[in-house]
Image (cartoon, rainbow, N blue to C red; front, side, top):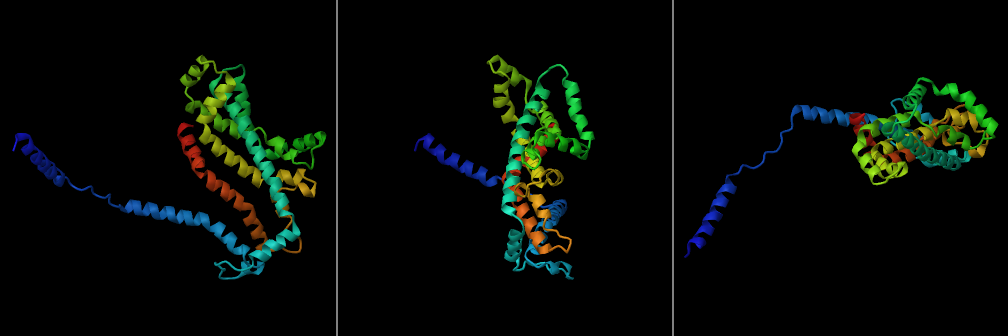
Length: 301
């Protein structure tokens, strides 16, 4: 037998010894602090979910169940009756479609306007830049209720009272959206990347589309969900400006279920359940981008 043939078994034997001599990886021990942390997270999650479960339970019972003690904690069989009562009293599907149109339109326009303004404030120099941004920040100091009367008079002059346009156009400019995206874009978009794009012949709009928007996508996702939820839940301004019953939004339509002779809480909880389900679906679909926007914005802002 040749020397090379003898060397092969020896090498295999050495490798086997070396492999057998390795210690198996130890599993990470679960420390008491980890147990406490997970228990607290589970408890916090259950506490956060309980209001939604309680709303669902009440929506399946008659109104009298709310006053029982101890409270009923299991679903009943009155959900169909409560939903039927809602449909007989208000046009909830029409109101939901109106709200969806307003919320989607406002969200898209806010993202467009806020991202354009934020990109300009974050990465370009122009006369009056700091003054204009200071004015945007100053709007945070004013409560929105102060603008209600001037805003209504403006809508009356335009002939938009009672129309959905009165809900859409006053919400186009979001000071929070401009501030949020500007803070994110300042650190997220490298100056060198914009300089390279300029050398390649990209103007403002191409830089905005191909550089800015892909970079600030997590912040846009957070702002989009934040704006959609705020527009969906808006109550005061639609209550003031909408006079046509066919143009009512969901929150205003649901307020009509309360009467001076009493409130059917089972029916009211069923209507609240219908109103919150679309928000839960949207949040579930965009939760990843939503959380990414929060965490990255917290680090970069």
